[in-house]
Image (tube, rainbow, N blue to C red; front, side, top):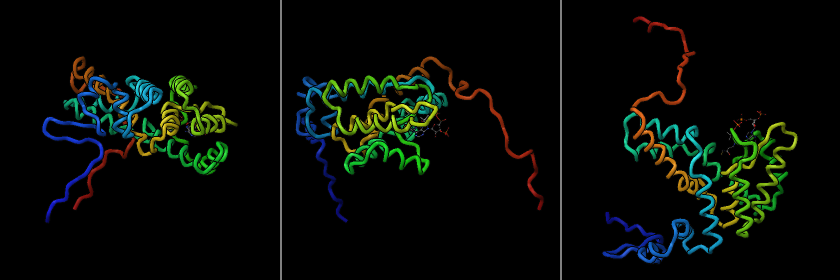
Length: 253
Ligand SMILES: CC(C)(COP(=O)(O)OP(=O)(O)OC[C@H]1O[C@@H](n2cnc3c(N)ncnc32)[C@H](O)[C@@H]1OP(=O)(O)O)[C@@H](O)C(=O)NCCC(=O)NCCS
């Protein structure tokens, strides 16, 4: 059977030629920042100055969060087991899920669908509370108010991006905390979800922003593990406690 060609509208390649979304890579190397290039490849067009500034700010905000997040623990554990840098970084990326970094996706979905449907913050929060579903993009293990959120929303405001999605996200935080003794802040995932929604990105790209931002942090952690620690060192919980069945023998016969 004849094999079908694949088509792409992202990058054109030919002998001695490389064009991303129509632009020559050599002009891009000389004239574009990495944030501008990321916007171009994801959106298909060059960003305005404000859009490029906003992308830059989001990427910086999520570069790293210390040694304890699941992705860094996984990446360093895989390196400690004697694996390559790429396998270790990939393990870290595989850890990015609904509770860690990946909450951007579902939070952006909720914000985009709720704004389109004209739902209020109170309605969205009540719907999730009734079903005992945690709202993605809210809550933090360490921060009562996520400092990155405050700054990102300041930058968004300065860049002219404060609109319905950001207002809904902030309103949801206020609703969520009503009658709750604990703080459930809009976390950095939720702030990025709100900002990319204002910028017109599809919610299905959500996790991509965290992956792009966190990969340099993962590379730094994996390299630190590789270059300063001995392999198979004790990582994570130092003790091990067994609470399964008592010792027993297989049935005879
Ligand atoms: C990030 C997270 C795991 C931190 O959790 P934590 O601070 O350890 O809090 P706990 O899991 O112990 O939950 C404590 C209480 O807060 C509530 N809570 C925490 N996050 C909540 C959320 N996003 N929506 C609704 N309720 C939430 C829990 O239901 C629990 O209530 P209870 O005491 O009545 O049972 C948690 O907030 C969460 O799952 N958030 C959603 C996913 C997310 O945004 N992840 C990105 C993190 S940057």
